[in-house]
Amino acid sequence: MHLVKKIEIIANAFELSKIIEGLDHSGVHSHVVIRNVAGKGLRGTAEDLDMTMLDNVYIIAFCMPDHVKAVVENIRPLLNKFGGTCYISDVMEIRSTKCVASL
Image 1 (tube, rainbow, N blue to C red):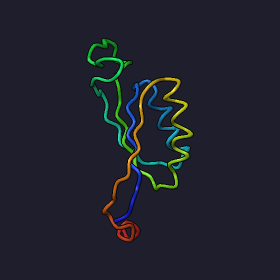
Image 2 (image 1 turned 30 degrees about the horizontal axis):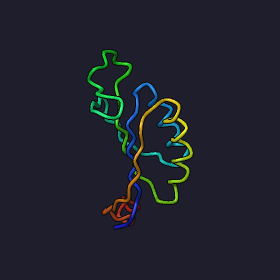
Image 3 (image 1 turned 90 degrees about the vertical axis):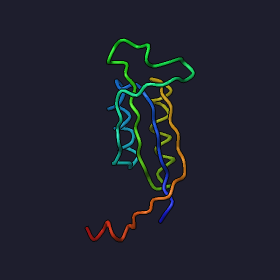
């Protein structure tokens, strides 16, 4: 087991490619995207939106702790400009890095 950082981003689907590019530029090359996310935040509910272009996405990625500064530097400007939110937390990865190398 080892400590990694979990990055969770909720943003407008229209900006997905820019966010993924920001993660890649930060050294985070793996992610999961869940589309058509709805919920209630500071701006109200997302279910009220009629246009598909305005659907939200939920992006989950993991990185080593030393990549977090680069992630924040690349993602924060996008979220400030286009909206959205990002949470970064400590989690434990239980997969052994030795097993991955042998596959």
